[in-house]
Length: 178
Image 1 (spheres, rainbow, N blue to C red):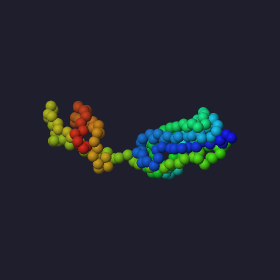
Image 2 (cartoon, rainbow, N blue to C red):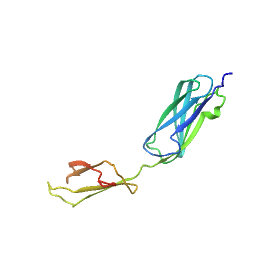
Image 3 (cartoon, rainbow, N blue to C red):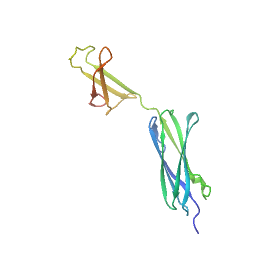
Image 4 (spheres, one colour):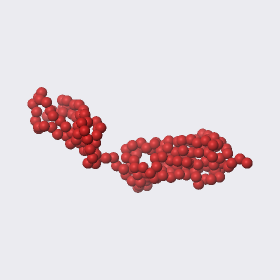
């Protein structure tokens, strides 16, 4: 006796994570065929829902899936312009011949958070300089009041007419001081 048709969504990632708004989130879903038949023309549907009625849907066709095999599908979710909050990702592979349709859907919840607020405090050793005189410049970079190491700090020195006369980058000395 041949096993019945049985497609199921075995996993979705990311799962239960906090994600920073502005990133592109790769949603990976593993779809398996544990049935006794090669299945053709399956439609994987990722639906993301969130605050204020947010809904985004992505579709991918799986041309064929051999019995006993699996496939991974990736849906890239751009989060620029999305508000902070809790989002539900539902992956569904509807299949009318499936003997066990309840396992064709998997849902995970993730939280989107606002990106950190960066603050750069720059100081010099005095207010005015004579042309040709060396300038002592330092900067401290913080994100939500915590020091940031490894940032790329670029500076521009401008004249009284707002024209750039010099620019460069400050090296990371230690613990967010450049």
